[in-house]
Image (cartoon, rainbow, N blue to C red; front, top):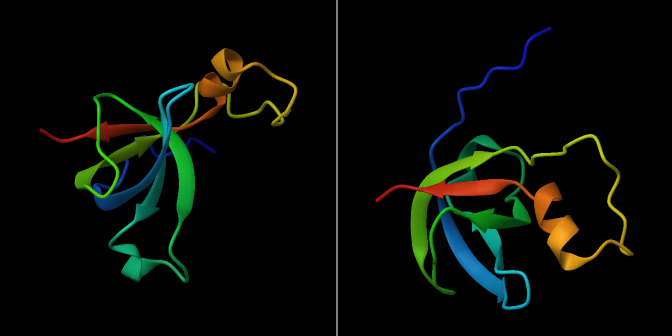
Length: 88
């Protein structure tokens, strides 16, 4: 079965940032189609600010099949996060 590469455009609230690896903690703002709001760490294609509401779509991580390992360096962990493509 092929995955659908079309990603849904949504609104996200930036609720945190890790200054070490430039990752962001985001909350899907318009999560009405889901049972519960989704909160996750991601990277972004541009700088965003904590408290900001941004519109965009999430792309899957570069290495989605690798199990998360807390011993990985921050540089390697960033490859295992989804990317938020923020609309301009």
